[in-house]
Length: 163
Ligand SMILES: [Zn+2]
Image 1 (cartoon, rainbow, N blue to C red):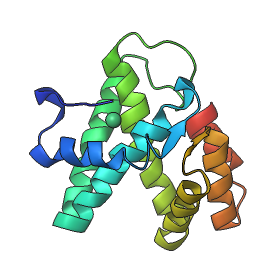
Image 2: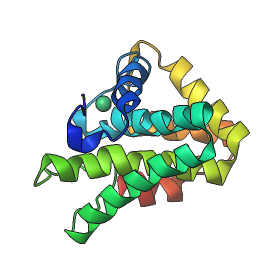
Image 3: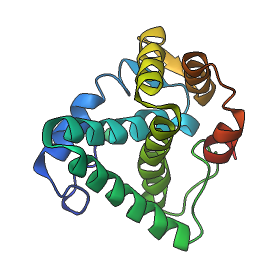
Image 4: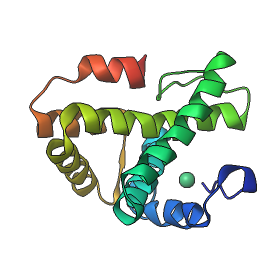
């Protein structure tokens, strides 16, 4: 699940952090099917941005998400802005990554902004703890975020994840 190509990693630590992050999202908590591959890659891409925010400050986080946004916009221009859990086949690896990696990360940022830091991080923590060593689907993630926030997030998940 590496993105270790020159084109895709402007900062050297990007790949290292991405792969380390898979220790949690990808290995400890694994998507049940490839349809929910965004749970591995989108969360990992987002956490790479969050790590950069922690390490270098807010601007680094924003810059990382801007890269994701540009990738998604490129795919969108070609007609490939799909829901995160879309089960169809992508025309290229780039289009698939634009959705599962980049849009996945943007969705995490959207949830963070919408729910607020306290609720968002609590939800992500409980999702990760509850499913450690197991497999997950997008519904598991939605439930964890709903439990943490006390909100019905069906509409948001329909927009971003299920289509
Ligand atoms: Zn990966």
